[in-house]
Image (cartoon, rainbow, N blue to C red; front, side, top):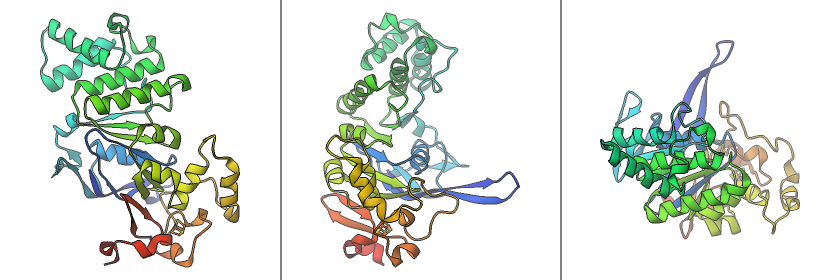
Length: 332
Ligand code: SF4
């Protein structure tokens, strides 16, 4: 879980001016074994930064990452070693995340040796074969001695997933894992991820900009906008009846045959200024970060960040339109 996690990066411009990128602000997220949470947002919404925080690539500026009830210890900005074994991150580009100089066999044997001390050719062979079969790369002989460039994009991503499974993680984080794949094989990949969460009981965070694939795979949806989580809850309810104006924009602009782009235009015609561009995370708008694009913005939205409102049935939203249902804790 991520508990009230914030990540700021100090950056320096070409002319030497210092500024702070507020990439993730007060994010709280719970993952459970056998369940899939989709983290949905545009590029620049902070979802990749959050994935990297969860994967232990860097430490939060404040807040903490908790694994099975225990806060993950950090030292000099790095998480303790064992954590990387429990939480594996799959990137968007399967080609970039495999060593191009090594065959599939080597790419899979390495984590088996490193994390589980597997030794001996016969045992390594058996484990590699098992991994490739789990990600449906069979007959195994066709793939095991290939180099990454000899495989298709989908096959490469399966090898990346097999390598993550070799570590025997508890949590799998997929950062846009299908977006660089051919449309024709995206569904197969989603089915593979779905099978891994049911058969292996993995907790899966599926990060995407695409509501349609989130709807297909996940149990719960969390929506991020400009570094903040703005809405969350069970997928069916969130998609059928979004409670945050940004979620509504996302849903209505997603290519669902039942919905046309016209709805979206009607909703956002009222405030065409600034539409289309997410705000800068160096100098985000005060108050609600969505207010420059929101047709419902009120005075309070321009100055005060909306608190989290509990909407029942596991649903919540951060929007002043729901101020009457804000939790007591947030009002203190
Ligand atoms: Fe719109 Fe205000 Fe809600 Fe932000 S808080 S989404 S500006 S109504």
